[in-house]
Amino acid sequence: MKLVSAARIRRAQEAVINGRPFSEALVEMLYNINEQLQVEDIDVPLTNVRPVKKVAIVVITGDRGLCGGFNNLIIKKAETRMAELKNLGLDFTVISVGKKGNSYFRRRDDALVDRFIEGGTFPTTKDAQAIADDVFSLFVTEEVDKVELVYAKFVSLIKSDPVIHTLLPLSPRGVVSDVNGKCVDAMEDEFFRLTTKEGKLVVERDSVRTKREALSPLLQFEQDPVQILDAMMPLYLNSQILRALQESLASELAARMNAMSNASDNAVELKKTLSMAYNRARQAKITGELLEIVAGAEALRQLD
Image: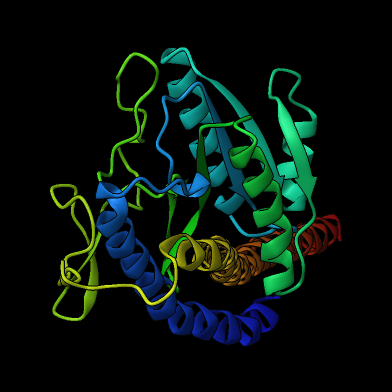
């Protein structure tokens, strides 16, 4: 299992690394366009920031176990976020992706689950589109006012961090509030903390969003701005969800590889310990039998 995970993780890692630049560039462009349109009276449903009454949480877990605490950490992160929303007096619904998450939330009577989605062997745009369609429907019909992704962010082969990623609405202000004006963004919200420094991704809470050069205020759109955003927002949803699925898969494979490596090392150590215990017992038994033979021979000699 360690070798299989090691073989698969290279493909998953390449997908994560190759997909990040496009995903981040698309978000930057949407931010810039959205900021340009704030002064115009244009209604784009996916960018509407309204008072939050209900939040949709998309929880992405793995399909298999034997990967250490990978799935438990994601579920624990989701449970923590649900508790925060309850304390704020907000309703929430869950979209569970992955067999382990599905199994957990099916046993939870108090968790309102909108949909269970089975994960695939390797994430595709089709898988991401199925989740995006459900999220789009919930947000546009105003069944929910905010959508968050909970998944494992791939950092390295030995580390992955469960993060909360705000998917909708796309707000240039970076703050989404409830009906009472209280901010409902998670303190560890990865979406608004991502920035770049010297070509490397870093996370800073002080920076509201990625630093970049803004579009010129004199910029004029050839097409209608609504048409541009209507074309880009589905692409944004699909790319962000696909990225989360890819990061989660890479993190799962890395966790499984490390777990199986540790299991192999533990098995070797256990074999060594048991071998020593067996040899000691065997040696003690042989020594005891020799002592009995010697004692018997000595007794016979004395009788003679």
